[in-house]
Length: 358
Image 1 (cartoon, rainbow, N blue to C red):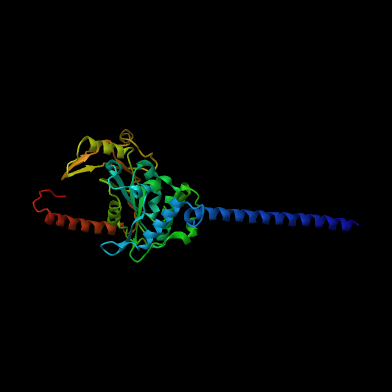
Image 2 (cartoon, rainbow, N blue to C red):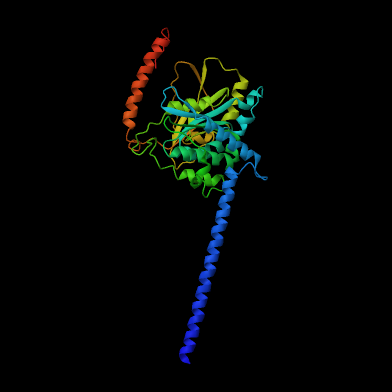
């Protein structure tokens, strides 16, 4: 009798454990299905079929424009070393720009360039600039797919980027960008704009400065990217800066007011003072904030009649510290010095009567 009671108690405990395990399995299965449903929903937000009744026409239109841009295969740069996808994704501003529109609406644009590991800076740049931008991105190897996918996600989940930013993609001529519809791993967990930038943040330390590739042996085509970004806008004036630089607040409005007060000369170049600041410092937004961080220095002006903008500036986030550059930086500097010497000799031929030298 005593043994029978023990067996009965054991059966009860065992049954309870089996029931708990079964309930846990059902719960985990439910969570898995729910997570899968959420991911399918987010994925359909990015790549929903245009045949669905509730499909978002705007998203489908953006998707098809991206698909078309990629289908062209891009164009080669003059050297034949790089493939350029100009206007990979156009902003709402550029898409809706009509001939004969108010010139002041597109008087000054910002052009910038970056590798994929610095694209996270776009968030603060758009927030500060709040006007049209043209961004040229350089990607190499597997990052070509990653860049295409994340840029598309930015234009879907980030309304301000969707409204103002034109994206261009540059990769090596032997590589091609493809539509990211099958690359689901790049979109896992992306639910909003903050999540996309968080994903970009994971790439920020992938390369040291501009050391790209497994051994840092891939050159970053600075000049090509600047030209692609500049060529991607039809603004009257273009401010070209690195993506980790921050313009002063209201620079766009202040510059527009300046040129409306007086017509610039045809040979006039506007100079924008540039500064560097430590990462731990708050980025100054106005001249008064900047002056608090700066012992004044005199700018040397030569050549063209340069007009220094009084209340505008850009600030570079972080100092360039020797020893933190990629392994080929010294070689790159030597090559740039040789190119600059050749450039100066060319100027003597191009402007033989000019007394000015640089």
